[in-house]
Length: 472
Image (cartoon, rainbow, N blue to C red; front, side):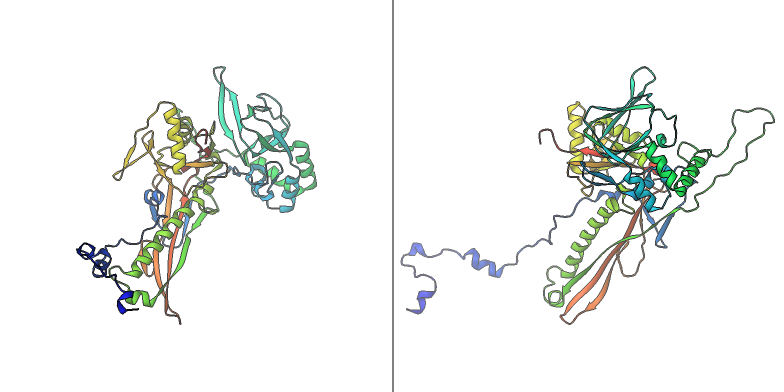
């Protein structure tokens, strides 16, 4: 075989010869135009942008409030399935008479006395004016409530959903009478405790009996509609009227929010940073992408963290259920009316789409809101910011948050500490950890943050929002 047989073919006619330099050969002499590394996981992160940030110099943020006698009022935890549901005993402390009672054995015995009852959709659980001697916890489903209206029409009260409860007063009051009706809006699984079983538990536990008696005493203390100790005032009097003496009492054990943390160790080989830093700095690009991921995690924690996350810190009185399933204008108005000076709504993009579908169905076309040069979907002039960190449950349901913000307005605030050692961005530092025997350089990347709700009505949540489109 001749030497030329393994090289380029021999052209036999003039037409077969290339007339110009080929692109494959030309690329060997060209410098390509490159983009920085792209990342699909970057979102708008509106929550981090619109919450006001408060400097926390000591690593903890104490929220002082007035003395509050209203106790409990959270959500009861349910374990198991809808067909075989069980109460999680410690969460019984979310029911006002049991708040602050820490005998796990007695709570376990009390939880075991609940029996399960299935209620088909449309069936009436109780009627207005009916005497009651049972306490109900909704394990799964939604109850629609109706009270007596002022003009003969029924007054629609907020529905009760998973983990909600009705009529704990029936356990201690032998003359308890229902002031509203309750009907199953969906098929419901209920956990039921009778007054007889409750009193039997009190007979067996003197500690629980004493605790419930103290609860009755506390409820007799003068307090306002928010459960705060009443400040005695006089108005409309004339002459030398004796004025009441009073003072504003404070909580003895105010809540403290400690800064949370998100961290990672970035590892880069020295050969990469030595030889491949043109035209882009490799360490700089690695840090940029790592910080983007940390910021995404930071927003996720501020929404979902079990300790300080907004979804887990909304007061039970500020948790609403949708009346029909999808988020309607009526639901958004109800959520909006629960607080003054609502600054914005926060919802998953699919929940926003579900709300706009309901508006379209009613012939409503909400005007967008201008915010820092962006046009944001809005309702009643208040922006609805998208947040893909709000979870979507298995049943295609999500939540919509509404909040008032800022310390001056007793709202929701974000917490961080700036000026930390080796700070790279506000509240985020990058610390050199050394080079190991494999010539790999390590950097510790950390960010510190939290969120605080200054008063309960600063944050509200519309729950069990159906986001699936009709027919999907």
